[in-house]
Image (cartoon, rainbow, N blue to C red; front, top):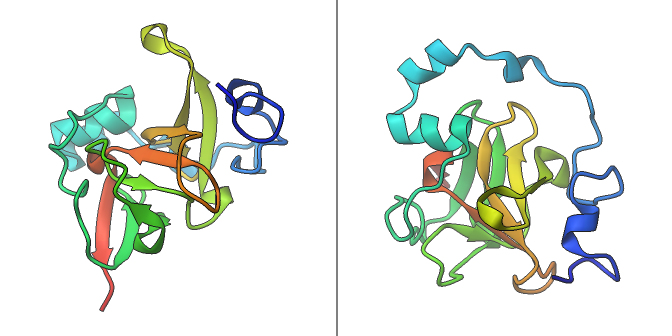
Length: 158
């Protein structure tokens, strides 16, 4: 699958030259959160999605058809990640965005699970699994950040 320029998506995933990748290589303190504390604080689905790389079923998440203006934050560390300004209806049944609030807020790595080659998206601050990014989104980026509602909290604009 072709993506950014002449390189394939899988060639750019996880490299420092990837414009969507965080420039920091060190792990922040929030990546060391206690799993027992997270299991108590998060719902079972939120824990499964963010800590065990799970996926909620399409059209079941609370934000897939949310049309309100506001900010989408990481459910684990509350980091602001995506704005409703970049959210669009991809028809997939998951919340979809064409770009993060700031490219340094998310990390991307190659995911070869389930016999597929995809790019997995994580919160750069805490490492929570958010979803995947695909090169079939709208302009201006051509990207589709396809995320799990269970990995997000929404803060409505006042």
